[in-house]
Length: 227
Image (tube, rainbow, N blue to C red; front, side, top):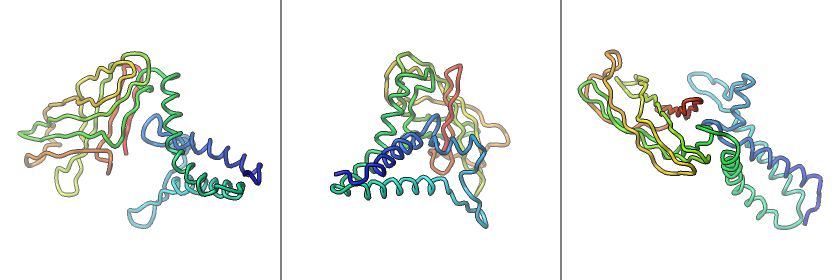
């Protein structure tokens, strides 16, 4: 079945590396993107006008295609099945590795997993007050109870094309060991004079479009999630 053991071995090494680098931790960026930031390399190239080219994803995709090419050329049979299985397994393996790591090593907020696509904040602005709640899909993978103090930054339109950042302190969250579920901490506060809109309205903010930034603080460490 294996025609070229050297190429197949290299493909497996690349698969393991891509699995680790595609893990989203400690925030919403992958370890590959975090590494670029650590060495002060930009993850995008500015284009004429206001656009930008996110090249980091293209480089990662290039290595993934090279891995598939190596697998294709190192096998005699079942090449299509093996390549499709690898494409399906890569995100599954990344999540499994992260879950295992969070269950065994880190403590506090670093052992918490947040479902990025299920998190959002609903708010209403009325009579110069902002109130609402945030839906957080959290999993505590550690063996200890946690008290988390969430804060959010919501960008809302005060006027056409004007997005105002508002810092919000939400109710504390108590999360038991190994607990997973939806939490809905609430908030209600008076807006500052400069951030008050001219009319009453309500809306929903999520990570898509950079309208929401969420932070969780366990009293010792703080993690931040954004788009």
